[in-house]
Structure formats: structure tokens, C-alpha cells
Image (cartoon, rainbow, N blue to C red):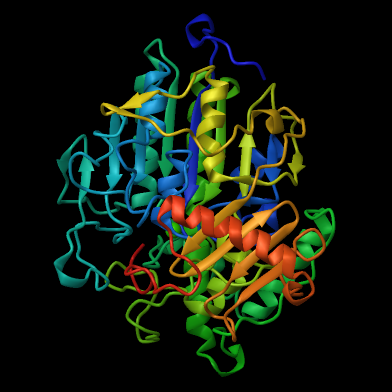
Length: 504
Ligand SMILES: [Ca+2]
């Protein structure tokens, strides 16, 4: 699509970028999930779903890339000043900008959302919080870490009965859209849910819908998801279902009723998010702007294996007074058919649903197997806005954007394949070029570069490193260049300080 001067185009689309938090690849129905997500299904039916779209395996690094079009720099916990955020870029392009939900890229000036290009902000500065009462300190907040919850730069400390973050973020998003609608500019809204990140908190009526539905365990859930993916034709070439993860334990010996409640509560959180997405879509229709609004949906990393505080089956998931997570077995199974989970850069950690609905532009009910990455979202938004990237931000010359626009893919064309894509979190490293992916998996025994042909082996089951040493060298050299340029870890380096047991 040719870029045009934005000022000449009065019909530039609004853009809503929605993101779930720690939601596995196959949790929602367009990707084979059993969780009831009719509104996300409607978005997929009216748009395109990607089957090879990637995030950065972790909350902070994904946000650093998604909101800048760049790979994370150094720790990845913030966006450096010489890199413009999507808020800064879209505001300069003539858009109104808002962020509702999780920021997690620094809580002090000059790194707050208001400092970084968002006209409006309502949400959470930190990685997670109590869903019913964000002011309540949680057991994961070591050393008295403060949960800041700001509305237009005001700290909120009291929450009414019935408060629930997923509802509140959506309420604020709808109010913001209504306010922006009365103005002459198009808007860019980032709705960043904290759902279904732990703690497991959901309204009782939503949990009740799923209670008892997970009593066959995680292995059965994986197989059922895999079979649904097969039946719907999600994959051009059906990958083999990966084997049981090292961290998964036997369902037979587990407290099955409690395990069922853990997964039922998680499912309720996703269900509730989908209900809220339905409310948001309804409000767009009522305002008459549904057809001129691009909606994108993705997850920031794969299902999560962490269990902050340990596995304590005396804690009942779902309540304001408890702090629980799904644990490694469900967290892994949520990424079926892939291996691993959040914080790992195997396909289960970095593969995300990516759905884009744009009436009149994106052909309804289509899928794309073209490879894409979250660094591509910002240049896509700039292209559809007909805008050029900022040359300067905060008095510093900006670095060239590393992602490339997906606009041609959205229009049903084949874009030139990206050069190498790279990932690193907590010592897990990977590089993908074309069909080939090199992975450094810190949970493997032994830990070494593994090589996979994703075209025939998307689930990373057949390591070809020993048979293709020259390709391993070529890809590992590309990884080393990337790690040196971005400040990310080299294979075998010490783990990131924040690599484990944090609330990211
Ligand atoms: Ca996350």
C-alpha cells in the first residue's frame, strides 16, 4: 500500500491494539481452544489470523518491542529515549493516543505513559496485581514493591465492591473512544489486559461455567486442542504434537479437583476478557466506526509455568484473598502443540495468536502463514496512517525502525521475508531465518545450539544441528551480531537478574 500524506486523507482508520497477558497459543477458539471466546472468533471470522507470529517470551521485552518497533535494548525493561514509542509516533502522525491497562516499562518520569506519547492512561505500571483490589499488596511483591495504579496521573488507592481489572480497563477504553470520537482526529488505543496473568482471580459466575471441565487433565486438553486445530485446518502442514514437558507432573497423582479449579479459573479469566472485547466492539458499532477501525489482538508471551509461592492446594483459586497460578503442567499445555512456555524461546514461549480485522481491506475469514513479529506492528500502524517515522524524539536522533510493515500481508499479498529474527530471555536464545531456527534452551540436557526446520517440524522435535554445522555457524554468528548490537545475552551467559520468579 502506498503511503500518502496523512493530512490529505480524512478517512485514516482508528487503530485498537489489544493484548492478553500470559495467554497460551491455543487457548482461544480460532486457534483450537475450548475456552468460550465468541467475540475473538468473530474478529477472526471477519479478518485474518496469523499462524507464525512471534512475541518476545516475556511481559517487559514484548512491550518494549511492540510499542517501539525495535528489539529490546539491554534489560528490556524500558524504551530508551532515542527510540520513539508507538504513542509518540502516532501522536506525531496526527492521532489521539491512549493506553488502558498494563504498561510495565518504568513507573517514574520520564518513562511513564504520559511521558512517552500517550495522551491518556489508565492502568497498571507494574507487572501484575490483584484483579479485585489492585491496592492490596500481593505475596509476590517482595520488599514492599508498590502497585501503582494511575488514572490521568492520579494514584488510585480505593476500589469499589465489584471492581475487576479486566472490566475496568475496558470501561475506560470505551469511555476514551467515545470522547475521542467527538474530536476530528483518528485514534490509536492500546488495550493491554493483565488477563490471564496470575494471580488466578475471576468472577464466580464465570468460573462456574468451566468448573469440572478440566478433570481429564492437561494431556487430554492438549490432545483435544490439537485435534480441533487439525479439524479446522489451522496448519498447512500438520505438525506432530510435542511430547510431555520436563516440568509437567502426572495428573493421576495430583489433587485433580484443585487442578480442575486452577484451569477453570484461568479459563474464566479469558472468557471474561472475551466478553469485554464484545462490549468494546458493540460500542464501536454504536458509534458507527466499526468499519473504519483496525482491531488487532495478540498475547505477550506463551502460557506461564511459574508458581510464585509454590504449589499450595490449600489456596482456593479465584478469591480476592488468595494468590495462585496454573503451574507448569497447565502452563505448558496451554501452548499446544508447542514445546515450553513463557520465558523460553521455543515455539511455546514466543508463538502468539495474531488476529487483525480491518473491514474493506483484510479479506474475512483468512489465515496467513507468513512470518511476523511484534516489531512489525508499529511500522504497520505508521503505514496505514500514511506517516513517516519520527526523525527525532526527546531531542535525540531516532534509530532506524527494525520491524517492517505488515500492510501488504493484510492486503493479501506476500511480503519479502524478514531477515533473521532473534530472541533472548533469561539465557534462552534463538534466531530464525526462513524455515530454519536455532535454539539455545536452558532446560535442555545438554544445553547447546539446536537446529530445527520449522517448515517440516514446527514443534521442534528433530534437532538437525549435528548434520548442518555450517548452517549452525551462520545462524549463531547472526545471533551474536544481534546480541552485541542490542545488549542481550550471549548463549551460556549468566541469567538475567529478573529471569525467574518475578511477576513479569
Ligand atoms: Ca506476560
